[in-house]
Length: 554
Image 1 (cartoon, rainbow, N blue to C red):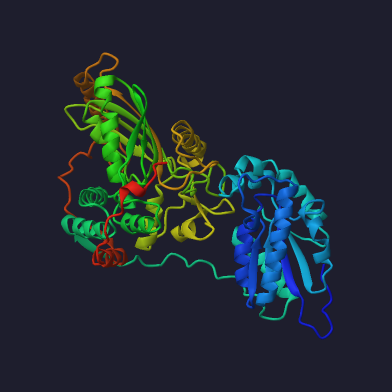
Image 2 (spheres, rainbow, N blue to C red):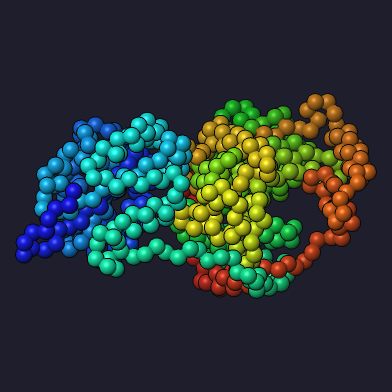
């Protein structure tokens, strides 16, 4: 639909329409494509041009899109745009018919790109997308994919086997062929590979690490008690050999606070749903503060019998094992299921190549006196996301069984998990039997997201943790804690009789230290770049703590 240039007049405005069914990726493709033009360019997203609630696909909605798109085109034309990218469901027999006069305007040069995808891809993208329209309503429009070829002169792009950047590269190449040389920027270079040598590291003591973390957190408005508890948690993770939940979280927490997604001084509140049921409304408070309130609620099981606690809208809880130990030390068995409220979609489903789930950890804890409690704190993904980030900071690759690329093949570059869009996804737990990890992740999403109402992958509720926790006395079935402890000791002794493979440690009960462990270390190594960043954050002037009353618990 290219109009001839007007004699003696300015060249026509090029209007590049990216159309397709809901979930085809039009919005993000448009955002990225407009940046590739070297001349003045603008973007019109028909969703944004008519972002009203409730959103309905009816004549009033089409009329609204018509008026706003015309006004925006005229404004950008007057501003001096040479290219306007329009993203939206523009198809014959629907909204496109309203623009017949504009399609015939000699001052406009129209070109259409039709994005196509299979129903599975469309559904997965819709569930991971945040738009004014409800996901269920958008899913019902999948049949529009079959109408995309009906657009006159459309250039079809099959997006099923392309990354988002790949789709943009494909369109940009077609545009570059149509326009003057150098009018469209070439594809961006691939993400850099993992450095051949590890990044420099620095050894720090637990005391100095805790001091730096406390100062950095306090400077961002964390109250002294919360800053100290959070710093202690992060340092303890480092000392336990779990840098995935250690110091690398400090910049993350400060960025979340600066963006308004974490409220350092907020206080969670409890809403009782029955004699033994309650909801803990996290108010985006830091994980250390939320955990303190969780322990208090779950401890009611000592007097009431089994209790159930749902969690909504908490800041990142960090490692769950300390929560399990603290509750089990009160003579209680604890079952916990934690999700990320539908955000953090970095874990692929079984056989998938793109993230759908968060790492969705499971927590199990049981008293076993006189020894320490037995505790299981495990992600339902092949590794915690922080383990991949830790490898990135340390400048080393990850094992080939952790990440999958868009083509389903293993990748070892941790940076690929953090490109935009991600060019890798975490695999589910289970290796060859990854359907088991996928099933666990899905059930955690249902328990935390649906039963506790925290939000889930198909209906996100923001960021932060949601969860479901069940606690009951270890003697609820008539066996004393001491009797349970004796049976655990027998299991522990039995494990010592099992032969182990060369170079492998002896099997042990979860939560128990390996045999021969000589105390806790008082120092650990941290990437030098991360330590420099923490030191700079700690040296910043302190901010006043935010008013916790301004937060509305979700």
